[in-house]
Length: 172
Image 1 (tube, rainbow, N blue to C red):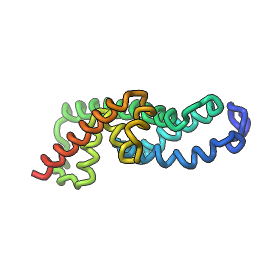
Image 2: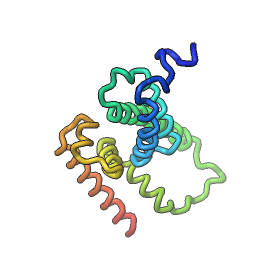
Image 3: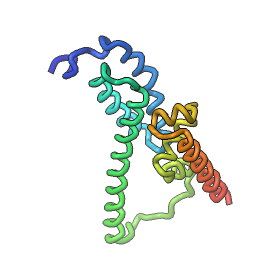
């Protein structure tokens, strides 16, 4: 394979891709982390999405929305795979009995608790909350996600209510 890869042009030769990548890459990583991805998971999903975008750059009309969706789907697929793996590991550990060196866990710190709550949100609510925190308007989010603005506002309202309730219960 040549230095250019199978798309036929080096990234610097694609009009606007380098500037798009520089501007959007950190934003997509940050948004994925806001919905519960670790830094490594967010980077992996974003890199995969950016690579796929590079291959179809000339044909993509809305690259910001496209790369966000692809990164989101990549993260969800990986998270579901990890969740299933953890369930199987948990079942195996439960059948094997308690580990002799097991000790009570310390109370999770506040940041971990907030991330737990965020990971517990339904996927669409997590998406909307992350985009909202990044400064997107309801109309912009609706366009990115392919839903109505009223649906975005409803998901945001439910996400905030869930966070508020969970944090109030945590403080008690």
